Length: 310
Image (cartoon, rainbow, N blue to C red; front, side, top):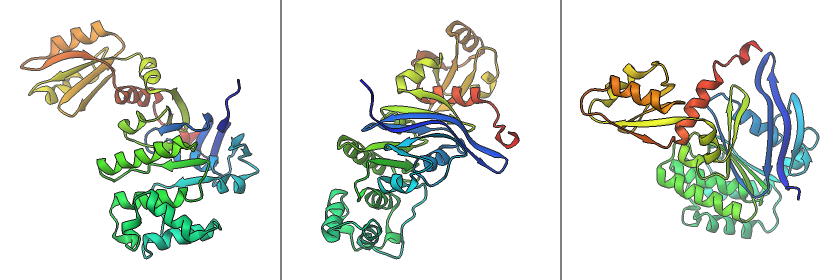
């Protein structure tokens, strides 16, 4: 049985003059799923999203979004897509309601008043509808932006780091809304730097240096990393980090919260090294590698970004 794909692109690439921003990206996203788009700053996530939704024309590659050709049908794709940018891009000198009414006119939505009323109610904005956008906190601006880009009931929702700079409760509420929209059949691709958000996605895609380097479920990517991880805790563990970095068999040494994570491919080598180098009250235990451990490994494996010289 064939899978109905919301996004089906192959060999997608984008150049700006001599600079290669994205190269050879394949992406097949089934309808109705929530996928996470991850990677360091400058990895090509935003450029890829903009090519998919018709805001940028690909320099190479081909494919479809919602069944429309990404090279020929950009306007049709945009009509059926909601795109929320990294930066709040609505009108700060208008109220919440006025912003939504303006967007409704842009999309020529019928029954504008009823549609705006329904959107305000659905996203919990009704009590604040007469507040100016510039007076809103980051979380409420985020909710207004989500309302504006979903008011026309798009089939595809593209979110570019939508929760940057908002508090944890607002992020949690936002993701509840995303999964509610997905349950109604909307397809969602969201770029994020937060590992807890990545773990809320059906699948994740990792970009580095303009290339796709990994794709799968969280469990798949952690398993394929081949990492073994030990966690150390104790009063002297922070000072131990610099001592351990670069030692044979210790590929990744990183401090998380009050614990030091040491990862590599061989448990025996790691155990022998940390036992030899550790003194004081630091205690170690082998733990399951986290998604963050896997991504640190992926970043290291990706190596130096050489796109400027391509």
